[in-house]
Amino acid sequence: MNYDDFLAMIKSRRSIRAFKKDPVPDDSIRKITESVCWAPSGMNTQPWEVVVIRKQPLKDEIAGLVREEFNRIMGKMPPRPMPQLKPGQKPPSPTGFTDAPVFIMLFGDTRIREFGPPMNDDTWNTVFAANLALGFHNMLLASSTLGLGAQWVTMVSNPDIAPRIKKTLGVPDFMRLFAMIALGYPDMEPTPKKMRSLDKMIHYDECADGDFRTYEDVKAFCMP
View 1 (cartoon, rainbow, N blue to C red):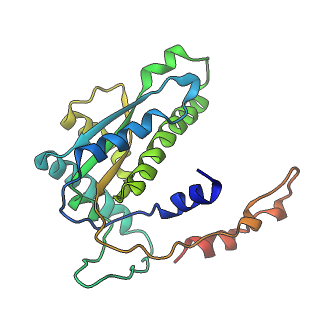
View 2 (cartoon, rainbow, N blue to C red; view 1 turned 90 degrees about the vertical axis):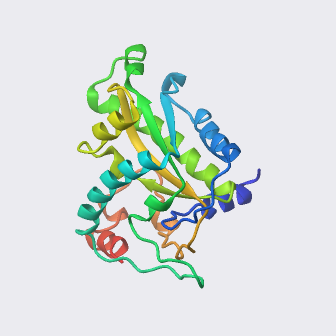
């Protein structure tokens, strides 16, 4: 794969918040989860554990927990522009993930800490989160290459929700819930992605405060 193909693959990955009811093939799910295995991890500890959820009662219970937290958080956020819809498409919503035919949970096994170099809690948690994020990103990219849509659902890691989800799924306490993918065939067209200028984002060698965005710049970019 050359760089242009690689960049095109990355650009094709977009968050999907409205899904068709069509089932996702088992082979596609396996390919997506296989992609986790090839992510880098500290000392090759490979802490990932993946739970695929297709049973409707389990999805409904998880969705109810996440929806409550989503609504609480989204109620405090400014409105976002609506994407362009094709005839017959339903508008996406922050809780559109509940219609996805498959949920994929990514967990990390915290017991790996015993078998690595000594680190303080902050450093270890940073490295551990990076391990999980790299594996999770592989799944998002793999989903896109298979023509599937995926939404990154972060609310599952909320400390008020994660223990309840783990109990529902029978996942032991030493597993850390990182995030969830809601997976299915897209029923929406994402809006064009707002992008920062590469020339303004990249810096070389020594830097000064004036090389970076002002608070006003950050606010202007982050607000719709």
